[in-house]
Length: 455
Image 1 (tube, helix red, strand yellow):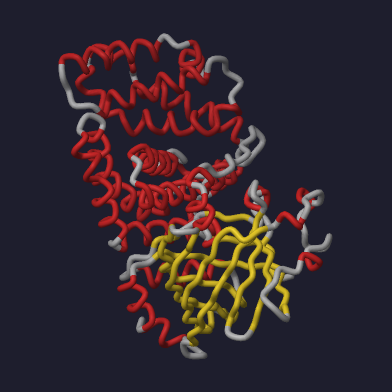
Image 2: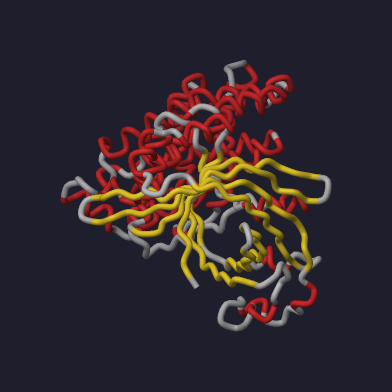
């Protein structure tokens, strides 16, 4: 068994060719590019028991070799994945279920009749592989770079595979993100939290691709630093899955959710006070603001304009052809992995970062609620948009961490605030001004809101 640590990056054919000649890879390439044709057959039961258990089982033909591989449940965060992998060389291209014993076979599949395993789809592609190595401080880094071009095939359906895969052979996971970010500075690389197997299942059954990542477990006892990191990883990973699925099927709701994820991440970044000094978050805030400046008005316009909704998928493809989205994703992953926000803060900032969420969050929400001055905006609803950043900070924490607050009716308050934020984003009309006024009153009279004001 070996632990596989890798990152997959979706690219265009033009970018794939540019990567082959990229100066950075040329300089660090210790082996030259080796070209192989890989034919892969994936197996599962008719009920897709392996897919539900997050297990992938395949036979690969690589030249004269036949390799049986089992990949078990691992963890994937914002495109960077770690999972256990078992490989067996076989004398012929026939699945050997005897290899799938208790040492590797997941316990949750112990009762599965392995005779029900059947071929379900193939992934056939040409791989150009090279060993990329360099010194990083006092440590050596070795990464296998693979340029993959081919197709996932399910019956008469197929989807193109065109990606850069970076797999860590020696060194720290941070080196993977570092290399990817350097390449993404000038090339459009899209971190893609979907494996070739998941693509096959998505073609096999469009409903099999799960957009939702497991919600982070947030508790009142958790230090603020840990809670912020968990929520930020979750939002970044979710935004990447939403981007991939919207690219795939163009469903409007996915674009709305993508923008909402980015807005929540932006709100969290600006909510931490001295626990995350502004200088440490500056570059990420600027990048997020640029994305939101372009996409938030489009989503708002698309609520009432079908032509905007129809044109959006093509505009989104243009976004993905630009380095901006991939570079932001990779830089944010590096920032979170290194916990850069905590590197140069003062003593008070360290104390805040170590504070339990259950004591820090009520104070933050109480201060924000007081500063919102809802009574003023009941009289001046035309100015409500100026408070959107504050509303969104409150809303983001209530969305993901209201369970740590011992306050009744928090679910209702979250819904009321979400409605207030939507109204603040709408163009000003007589009707919208009246709706803003009524919604400000509804929030102000909410029982949970009154309790926040007393904190």
